[in-house]
Length: 635
Image: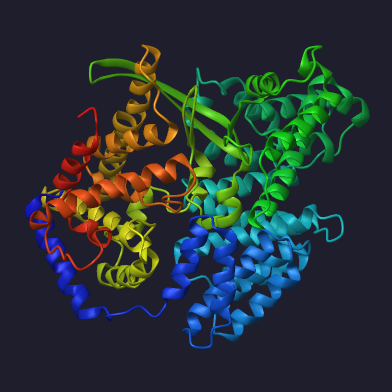
C-alpha cells in the first residue's frame, strides 16, 4: 500500500512534471465536452456537440477528425445508416484521421450497412496497420467479424474455404494469448459455421470456466458429451442421434444460438423430423426469441436516443417475443395464460437466463449464468451469505452499450439471487476491464514509463474541460492516474522485497487480483448481503442508490489498494446520471471532495483555486480510506 510519505513524494513529482510539460490550456476541450455528454448518455446533446465540432473551422484538425469518426460509428451502429457513416468517414479523412482508423471505420460501416463482403478489404487493411498488441487484436477481430458476416449473408456469401483459412489466424491468436476471451468467442463462432469440432472444443475450453466443466461442475456432463461427439467432426453429415447430443449439450452450456445454427444449417439426414422434435424445437425457439428481443430493444434504444418516450416498451417487446416462443413451445406456459414472471422463471431454469430491467421498462439486460459462488461473512454484528453469479453470452446488453459501443464499461447488476457480474468474453469486451492480468498489460514492467507518463499527461489535459462548472464528472485522466499510481506503487513494493525478476509478473497479478477481490467481496458484496439481512429483520430497506453508495464505500474501505476501487468502479461513465450506480458514484466523489476541502492542509500540493476532484489523486491510500470511513454509517 502507498504510505503517506511515498505518495507525497510521488504526487509532488507529478505536480512538478505537469508544470514543466503541460501547457496551460487544452486545445481539445470541445471534443471532451461532447464526449462527456455521451458518457452521461445525453445522446442528442452529445451528438449535436460532435456535429458542431466537426464544422468548427477554429477547432484543432485532429479533434475534428476524432469527432467525425465518433459520428461515423454512431451512424453505423445506432442508425444503420451507411451513407451517413461514409460521409463522416470522408470528413475524418479530410481532417487527417489515421489511415488505420479510416479503414476500421469503413469496415464497421459496411458490416452494419449490410455489405460485409466489401468490408473485408478495409478490415484487413486496418488489421495490417494496427501498431500495438491490444489494437492489433481488436482489428484482427474486426477482420474476422467481416468474414463471418459475409459468410452468413445470403447476398454476399463467402466461400467456406475462405473462412477456414482465416480461422487459423484466430487459432494462433488464442494459442499466443490463451486468456483472450474475445478471440475464443470469435473462434468458436467461426468453428460452429465451419463444423470444425476440434476447434469448437478448443474455444469452449477457454470460454467455459474450468471449475464448471470439470468433474463435479454444473457443465461437466454436457462438456464431456461434446468432447466425445465433436472430436473429429469436420463439416461431415451428422446422423440425427449425434446431432441431437451436440445441439442439446450446447444449449445446456448456454449456447442456444450456436446449437440452433448446427441444428438448422449443417448437412443432416431427416432434417425436417429432427427440427420437429420437442427438445430441438425448444432450442430453435429460444434462439429466435433472443434475436427477436434484441432487434426490438435496439429499435427502442434508437427511439430513446432521439428523445422519444419509451416507458414500458421493453416490457412490451419482451412479452411479444415470449408469446411468440410459447406458440412454438406451448409447454413453456404449462397450460396457463401468459405471465411475464412465470416465463422469466422458465427461461431461467431451462436456459440459465438472468434478466435485469430498469424500473420504467425502457431497457433490459439478458445474460446466461456460467457460475455461482456463495461465501459467508460476518461484519458489523451481522452474519450473511454472499452469492456472486457470473454471466456470459449476453443476448441483450442495455442502452449504455448501444450508445457507447466499445467505450462502455460493461457493468453487471444486483438481483434477488445475488450480485451478477460479467464473466468470460463479456468482461473482456468491457472497456478498461480491471484484473491483475489486464493491469499488468497496461502498467507492468514491459510498459515504457516515460512514454506512458506523456500519454497520461495528454489524457489528463481534457479533465478540466470535462468537469466544467460541475462538482463531479467522469474524468478519464484522473481515472488513469489513479490506476497508474496504484500499479506503480505495487511494482515498487515487489521490487524492494527482493523478488526475482522473473517472478514479479506473477506476484503483481496475484496481489492486484487479491486487492480487487477483497474490495469486491468483503466490501461491496458483503455490504449488500448485510443490508438485505438487516431489511429481513425489519429495518427499512434503503433505496437502490443508497445501497449502491454504501456498498461502494465498503469496497473502498476493505480494499488494500483503494485506488483500484476508485479507478475501476467509481470513476466510470454515467456519473451523476439517472441510474442508481451513477448517483452512488457521484455521492462517493462528493463525499471525498468534502473531506479534501475540510482537510486541505493535510492534502499534498492541494490548490484551493483548482477544482478538488482534479486533485483527488493527491490523497494517500490511508486518506482515501479514512475519508470513506467517515462517510459510511456503519463505520
